[in-house]
Image (cartoon, rainbow, N blue to C red; front, top):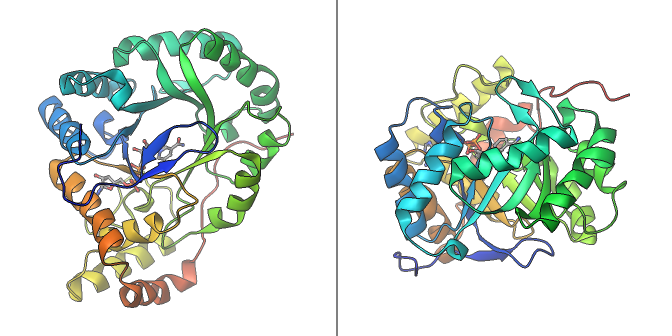
Length: 324
Ligand code: NAD
């Protein structure tokens, strides 16, 4: 289906997969009520609008809302009534509402459960979810070999790994055979407040690994409404982002739009995965991308935000267990 907006969303290749992802990807964690309640009808309408405007990539996980996100995304994708090859779906394994389990037995069972909830025969990408909470050696020696079997069985097309600390990606990619891990998903490391993913991009490119960068709005820090209660950032980082959002508002600008445009500008990143739970958010985020393509980014406003965020630039938070 052709995009309904006048400037279609750019499609970018994902590493060596042959997939072409829309530059704005649909993060479905909000459909699991992670950022507040979302009705099923709103979720369906949001996904429909995303697809109508050219978004072809949808990401979920059994963890989001304790399987709710997968179920609701499945219903919404089915309601599109378009051929399966017109959209790309990724889900995850190893992280669940009751904890982590990256064993071969659990991830093998997990994909069948996910496919049932999503009402799909296969997913395009299955990603090991937040691997810093498991043993990275188990990921290399047990989980990824189990996922390779799922690939052979046709239940998944490509394999990915996700997490917060950037060093987990090199640890795993340096230890698996080439072209076994197709994709990495990094989050909160390529936005106006933290751009540390940039240093890893040449390495990932040299390995032919596709790059998905999630959370361009830093999980709500870079929004006028602010982050949810559970947000792990330090009070200092929260305060700086709040000040930046207020400054933008005072100047008649929207921090979320500027943040989207900053993240979208780097074409070595295949897709910017943003969590959305309303038609308005879809419209705004797609408009940010089309405006970037036609007018360019607002360098002056971005440099002003950069000044406000300088004291907390690249500040992150701990995630995961100590690896032996
Ligand atoms: P995000 O930075 O995309 O922020 C999402 C929040 O911003 C939500 O509250 C959303 O409603 C709001 N929002 C979206 N567009 C807006 C707009 N235009 N104006 C104001 N508010 C807006 O954070 P996220 O949702 O955590 O990340 C995006 C997606 O990436 C997730 O849904 C998930 O699919 C994926 N992700 C994966 C991992 C992982 O694998 N470990 C981690 C984080 C995110």
